[in-house]
Image (tube, rainbow, N blue to C red; front, side, top):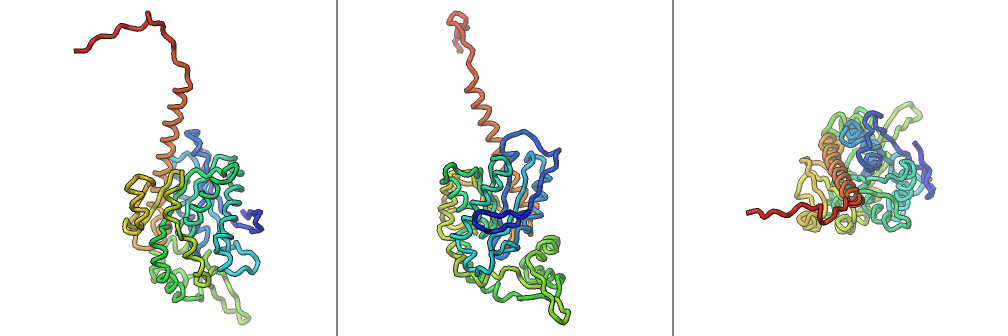
Length: 331
């Protein structure tokens, strides 16, 4: 579905709706939507495998899953705006806040769970911070980050740039592109490669009839603004007054700020062992399970809190002093 935002950007969104039999009135979280944001150079459809697995999880009670192309990615292009302009936070954040508002209106105000990978995680955390400042605040319920760590991102930026510049700029066929994604180690899951690589590419047909496919988004042209997106992310994430989950492929990918905050119990950590960066594409089952467990825990906490508040609201039965049983001394 194409959603035109007040910022002027037409954003392609992809919706996965739960089967009717999975809908349950367990808690308000059951009707909240999960908004998934992709990383730099990727597309919204890279969340498809995780989305389908979350929908099949009957423990959640039926959360709609939504993913969207970020500005400058996929089909969310704004005229001929240069990519290094599109990926500035000053451009990405207004888009995201407008998108959160539009989607939350669609789900009747029950709230959103913001979930982002890499750059998408940085945008999700900052959007949550700004959403809570608005009057009235936008209904962001919780934040989930995947492989979105300030220290790791800034330290590995030069290697990421070199990798993007060294990768093939075009392919003679989709099969070649898929094969390259697996042989290069970009992805390790063949099913994800077959499903997620084609949307990352744009088709060209030459006058002589030859075909080629090139990357929709060449992130190497916007490296100047990528590091800025991650600056201060760890402290911002930790300070969010919301339930939070961080999913990483290894514990040593956390920076010092996150390590200290995790020891203090300020967010939940789930490790899905994986050497690569595209953890949600290579390990969709494990990532979906990590998210599902986290949301289930929130549902249980909400149900327990609601029960406590219901008990406090119920008038206690009054008893006369004479009706009280005499205390017995226990020896």
